[in-house]
Length: 256
Image 1 (cartoon, rainbow, N blue to C red):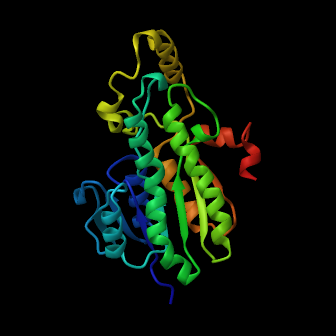
Image 2 (image 1 turned 90 degrees about the vertical axis):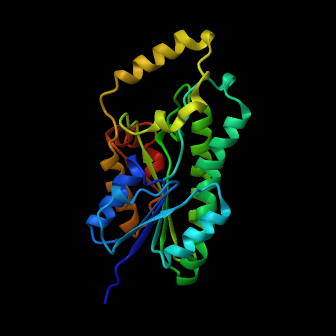
Image 3 (image 1 turned 135 degrees about the horizontal axis):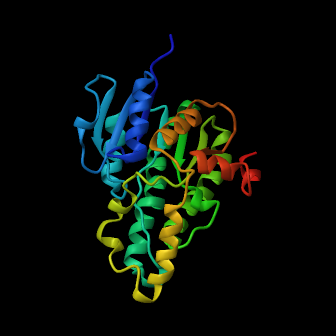
C-alpha cells in the first residue's frame, strides 16, 4: 500500500507558505505547517494537519520541530523576511539578520532533515527563493544576496545528494504584491531610503506599480507541489506569470 506522504513547510503563517500548506493538505498529504508563532486557526482541523513552532534561526528549536514532525518525505524551506532600501543606509546588523533567516535558516533546516532522507534514499528538499536571483532589481541588494546564496547552495547540494536518491529543487517566485513582504520587513526598513535616494526610490516604486504580470501565492503553491512530485532531475521551477516569462527569456538557459 502507498503510505500518505508527509511534507514539512516553514513560514506558513501567510503568503506562499500558507497557500502551500493548504494545497498539500487538500491533495491528501500529511502537512506539518511551521511558523514562529503557531496559528492553528489558519488551517482546517484534520488529523493530517499539524502546526508546530519553528524559528529557523534557533538550532535547538529546529531540532525539536524536526523530531516532533517524525518521518518526512518533503521539506519546503519557505520562511524568509523581506528588505527594501538603499544598501548604503542598511546597517550591517540588518544584513546579518537577513542572512540568518533567509540563507542560514534554510541551510540549517535542510541539514536537520537530511539524515533521514539520505538513510531512506528518497525524499525532496525544496528551497523557495526569488527571481531577483535571476534578474537584478534595485533597492533589494541585500535581499537578493541572501536569496542568491541559497540558489548556489541548492544547485551544489542537488549534485551532492543525487547519489543518495534525494532530489533538491528551487522554486523561484516572481513579484507578488499581495504578500506580507513589506510588513515582514517591519521596523528594519525604517530609514533605509535616505533623502538623497528619495527621488530615485520614487521612480522605482512607480515602476513597480506599472507591472501587470505578477505572481500569486497560489501560483507558488502549485509550483512547489509540482517540484515535490516531479521525479526528474529538474532544478529550477518558475512560479508566477512574470517568473514564467523570465524563464522563457534571458534566463531560459537556466531552466533547461
